[in-house]
Image (spheres, one colour):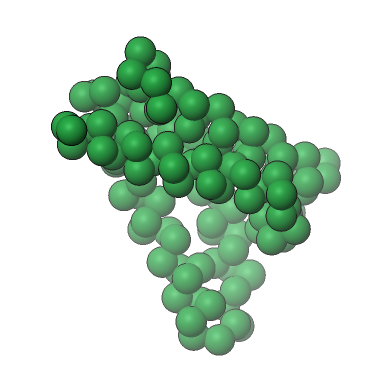
Length: 122
């Protein structure tokens, strides 16, 4: 199995799991939706969950894998403000929680790079 295919499979599982969690247990995700966005947080949580499931589907199928990589990169960029909100909100939490919130920031860059790798190599 090629590196791009392994990466696509990893992103597929990650996004499918995250998408399902957004829909099944939305409250934690609602809490990190940037408050500056108009409308209810739940709308953004549900929309991002549906988008994650859709992108996972694109990554799963060979004919749409490259488009899935582009879509995954765009989605990961789009949800980055939620990671920033989480990091800002968790500054007073215990060290392990802060580490999780802060660690998500550079990890997002790695995931975006992986998605772009899939987009280039399919």
